[in-house]
Image (cartoon, rainbow, N blue to C red; front, side, top):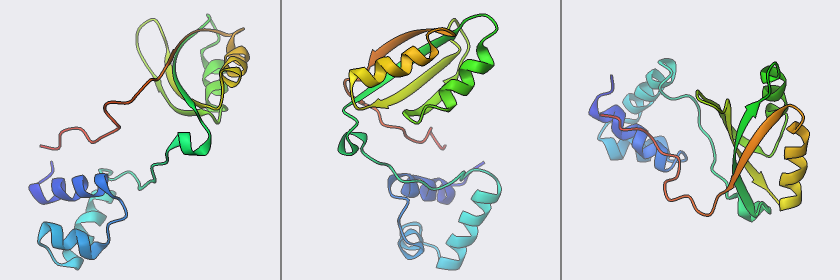
Length: 145
């Protein structure tokens, strides 16, 4: 389990992973070595899985984002999974229970690009696509307490 200090460190890093050790230490009221040790232990335990950067796809020319539910045809599950993994426009994909096996999030420059990607898997899976209008809840940490 996490104590209050660990939870606070995770929340701070979630908001800004570029905070310096000095800034993190000041925010949680610990020395820099103590804070560094806590972070090391969180990484060792697998609580912190990595550090990343968030980018704005629209600024990079990706005007559209879509959620695609994918239902592989019988016997095609592993092939479809590899096709999804090979799509650089797929920024996230979950393998799920229910009628659909995969839910993928795509960043796209145009509708034509979406059509071309869907055509690649059309012989092996059924798809249902929804264009994303807005993201009222950005990816965030689950409750830590």
